[in-house]
Length: 103
Image 1: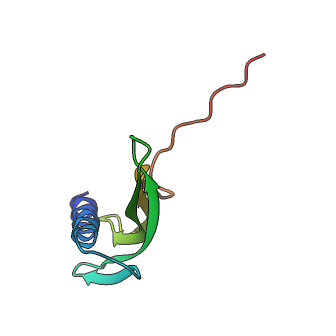
Image 2: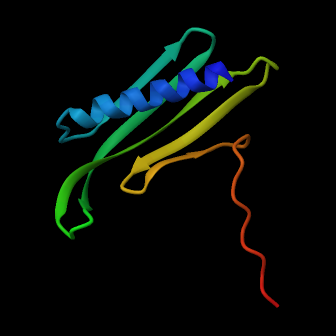
């Protein structure tokens, strides 16, 4: 579980760092941390409409990270961070079940 937090911290740190830098062409990064943690990300500029309806230059970041858990299994998380927030996906991450169909 500790590796998950380390990997998550690495993801958020790179997002924060790359978001602070002005990007015209986008960005990419690949980091391999000890203990078999791998982090890969790329970003691209995007026009985003803010809450007031104004157009602003933003950036979409997307990527993945993986780590080997104490049980020996490799877990991979694919994610995107955009105007809708940080959205991780992985086979081991619980998801909200769809609403039941009404009769």
